[in-house]
Image (cartoon, rainbow, N blue to C red; front, side, top):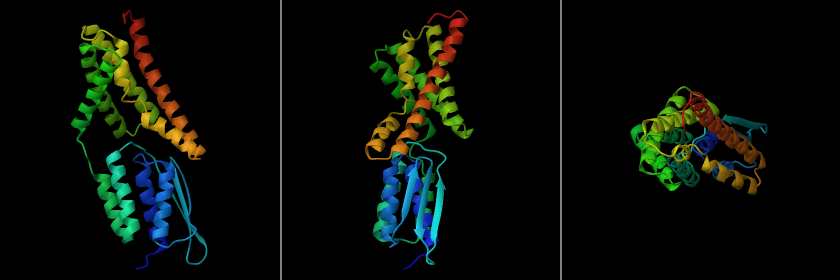
Length: 257
């Protein structure tokens, strides 16, 4: 069965967007769209992707090119959704279904939730506590780090609903971590504020992004690697400023860290 090239182009771009916005590498997005076009017998597809944009151009029936731009405004590291979209790409290339079926499956994947908000909060808290232990904190420090982890995820969730940008989200979240750490020291529950803060901010450090930077540059995607370097640096600056501000205020007011 033949489908209109406009719908196939739109379906391919949506699949690529599903990969990219859930943490897929740029080169994988380009490969997935190329395999999609090959499966539907569309030759000479021109594909260009960077972290924020996907551009695909194919020859139209009248010989004139059909081009679509897909804007990606938010990127997260959701391995569950990424796996499901990647699996959908493979099935689509094998069975070449109607584009409407692809749209429905992408909507189901987009609306799916693997973990509840409470479960994610607890995961942030546990990760913060264990990182605090890892860097040399004691039990009291780990408890404060656990609370800071809970507060971090709550703050990130609120910032997401407010559609705050990545810099402001990490800035405010880091400030919350510093405030919780200071309160833990004031109450006597924590003993090492540096261990508390280090343990909690590990949940904000873009480790996967840093790893993907080198992978992108080595594979030849220098533009993508450069963009991601800028994003990682922006996050690092936000974390540093967010931690420094509450500590500076507390020290100015006469607190002892």
